[in-house]
Amino acid sequence: FYSLGEDLLDSLYGCCASAKMDYFRFVITFAANAVYMFLHSVFMFVQIMTLNVAINSNDKTLLIILISSQFVELKSSCFKKFGHKNLFQLACSDVVERFELLIFMIVLILVNMAEIGSELRPPC
Image: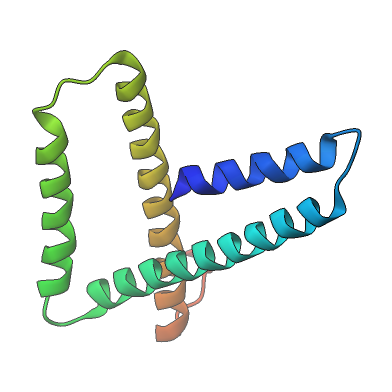
């Protein structure tokens, strides 16, 4: 899904950077980018909501399912042979996924702190 977004943004840049600009192509490319960005935002929002429910639920079943799905993903990619390019691409996507998870956790900690009424103040 991420490569589609990169391709759409490259297409929009190519459409704008060309000397002869086709306005119909620009409008179509811009509309496709807008739809992609909206869908990507919705998916990210659903992901952070699911993580929030998993963290705040009394029954830790959803959190266990989320963690076990990570182990299944690790197991499926652990025993495969990868070339240098594929391994680099896999490592980069893993870094991006971990960074997103870190940002999601920071946002969820701040939201949960705001919900329980605690303030961010230095200890004195």
